[in-house]
Image (tube, rainbow, N blue to C red; front, side):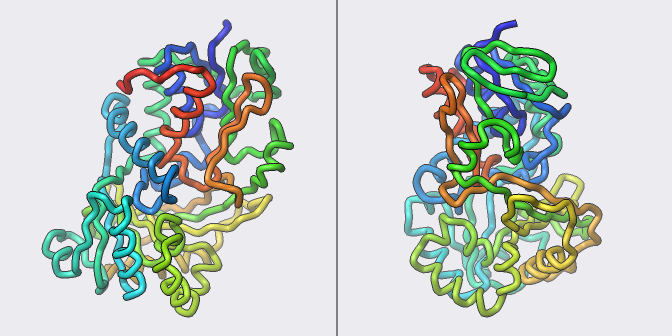
Length: 378
């Protein structure tokens, strides 16, 4: 069968391209070597993060992606398990960063609460003493392990997207792709390889300086704590560019280098989210390398749990799961899309923000490539 669009990769970036193309009226096939999404798209917090994304295009893309998730999730049977974000500032320097952030356009609809105001509004967990808290209404969280398969099913059932799984893409050229199951004809091809950097168009990846980032995360047994929102803290202000690029962040980074140098060197910052069963997912660390090893570092786990204890009075529950993830990263920018051959487009999110930005970025890429405007979301 001939398709209008072939998408290679069924992580969140690939599925976002399939969704945008299907909304444009295209006949779409998605090709992946695995039977389901198994990479970075399911090994994350499922956190559609807006506040903290890089100012400008990335922040706007996160806002648009958040709106797409909001409209799409109930239609696809994907529960929104948490909403919003609490960013706790424990240091005076962190408080100043939050004040500076709130004064930008990115702070729209966010609140800055004193510790007393925050504690009077939210109960169910006991944070360690802090100075102020940024409360953002924008964020959503889904369970990535179930959300990605549900999204694929919905694309097949509602949008008639064809899935060719356990099928490797061997080459892509004008007019389609050659796969391990034979050729597939398509007028336009979108390559969304995620962390698989050993396959197609290696010269493009080399020119874009794409390498990999390995992260570690843990799931903790429920300990009775109920989080009102996902929680972040001071280390995240030094990591997320929407905060870190502000002038006020320089003093915070200088202090963190004195007090939390090990964490900074391991790329550890704090995100804490809660699943419907009460378990807590906490992370994460970041190591940049061309060849990430498969081994989990207990030292990095210690640093992650140390960051947890900086912000929570409750002792962390027993770790019941530990895992690593690998995503593509580049020093040149947070994402790119390039026409690598006539009608063949490669799109990679190179900053670990695929869940937060992929749907908006895919709209832009697909609209430009197909010279169409995607239709309604539902």
